[in-house]
Figure 1 (cartoon, helix red, strand yellow):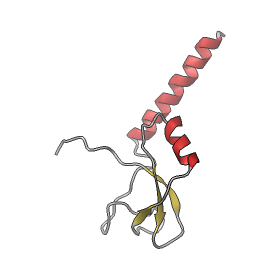
Figure 2: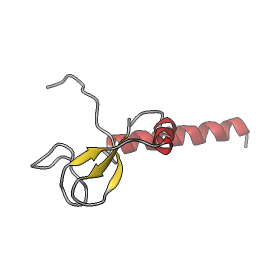
Figure 3: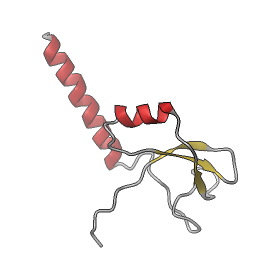
Length: 91
C-alpha cells in the first residue's frame, strides 16, 4: 500500500473518531440539580484548576475541537478534563 494512502486513512479515521466523540458528548460537562458542572462521581460542584503542559498537548492533539479545561471536585478527590459546547446563539 502507498504510504500517502495509509497516512491519509489514519488521519481521516482519527478525525472521524474525534467527531463521533464530540457528537456523543464524551467528556463533556455534566449538569445536575445543584450546579451546571458536576463531579461524575459524587454530583458535587467542580472547581477549575491550573492546566499542565500535558493538558495543552491534549488540546492540540484533538485539534482544539473540545477546548478541554481541567477541574477538581470540591467534595471528593476527582480530577479531570471537561469541555463544554460553545454558545451557538440558538434558544
